[in-house]
Image (tube, rainbow, N blue to C red; front, side, top):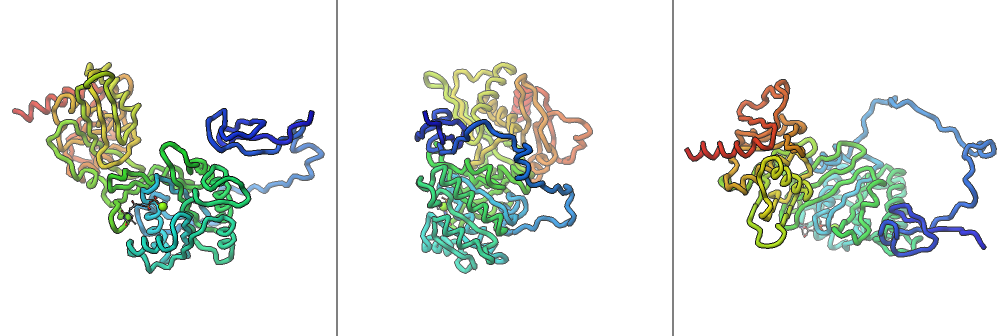
Length: 466
Ligand code: TYD
Ligand code: MG
């Protein structure tokens, strides 16, 4: 019997199969089996006496660099973008910008690249749009005169050949990686193999020529297209442009950054002149708020280094039949279930026969557990019909025993609340030393247990009625 000379390895989970198949039986991924040569015989020691001659000794250097220079950054002077990438683009780096189709990635990057064109040599390669389409968009954005080189191309071989020269561009945009193909592979553009190989080639050339490479990648909810997720470990920085197409806000979120902090967000507003920076997102997210409504609470959140206030809305309505519904927009489903369970078990407030809807106003998506207390306040307010005081913000994490836990940077959250005219806060109890109130204009109510929240509301309501 002849020995197997090759096998097929799933590129997502690493499972190995003797035959090719469209679907990996182990992880269920599609189109991810790639042929690899099987090694014959047991592996030999790399550093055997026989093999040692092939090895080169690497030279170690001290961690501390001899020159004290900082990494030079390429600034677009679009503050929201520069902050999210960690203070400007780094040369020889690769940045992935992901997001749903139509969310505004091409628009944002065209704006960024045209601003960068003032000081740097920039090139924008579109695999999706024809030259005229890009020109039309640039004209609409008022950027038609920017000195940006433009191409409509999908062959990675040609792109690499064009930029692998002495006068390579400083900044190169590839829009999008799903349209690029390498002609040495048989698979269609957009498959995992093509996306990965194309990105590998482009990143190699970016490192070699000190190009700041920005790759656009589409993600779909059901993951049918080979999403940019396979690329996340290959690039230096991963940004996601998020938002609801029904809302005008777009949030650029950093999820990985080798050259700066992650979790930073940049907030933009989609207008007919493209994406505009939003300097004060809290004011925008709270713009349409009505202060006499029950079921709404303002959460003093933190996105990276920046405080953001948002309104959390809850609606508790009698369930018409069957299992009550729980629907969440902008927050975690599991987290809502947990808060409901804690309210039921520790505070004796039942939601069993009610539908519960939760919404983060303005289309923002919150990931912080610190929103727990504001969510609980909104839920209790909707259930009892008592509005949360309009001038009150809330934050705090809730534990399973109903305890309200401390969260990071309370001072920063309170400062932002004061800036926007809030006069009251409900928050976890903190050390007296830390709470040398930075904001004397604010009346803070510190609670230790979630069960203290409902009496607080009822007292407020009584004061209001008196
Ligand atoms: P686009 O950048 O093409 O999305 P992506 O590259 O992420 O697929 O954005 C497309 C949407 O943006 C489209 O629905 C129209 C809207 N848009 C505006 O509202 N204003 C503008 O100035 C531009 C250029 C686009
Ligand atoms: Mg696009």
